[in-house]
Image 1: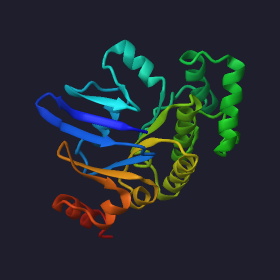
Image 2: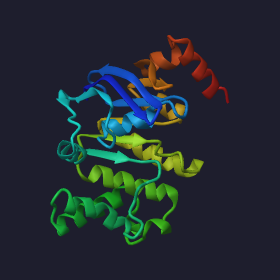
Image 3: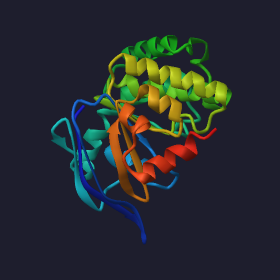
Length: 243
């Protein structure tokens, strides 16, 4: 994946969340965004997903610029699989239906094809016994695995993960991280926002540290963790890797 972010800024009322963020990466499979809470990571991810409008700046993915009007963004969103920290499953639908609904309604799959694809994904992710359950009947880890299965069912160009384990306990976190690692090993491209530094170090090609709406430092993963160049990056790593 080639990603070019040029001077992206975003305000919410008087609060400047992203301050002329720029980043240019070529042939990156996994970009991990890290940084303190409130630094702008999730907002940047939502702009890449076409879920927020920037106030200024441009984004190009694989040479194609994101056009921030409603019609263009609808087409853009249909090509991306996005996984949120709160799962964003439909509570009144079963696990199976949460996967088949977008396939039928957004991607015009037949009902039979949608069910077949959803069942294959549920089996792959060890959820075949839970297809008839609604989200409230599933554990947090199972809900997030259903959300990931839904995201990849549409055969996206790339995946976006926004703190996918922040609402999970350690055992469920491990389940979900193993699943994301498996997708990475398949060669899928994705951008991941996470506070899991060990996982970031294991899975990333590139790491970008966002703080106070700015990219403080961006580098290949080994360089970032072993030889950070900025004082702010060194201080951040010292805090999060202390224990």
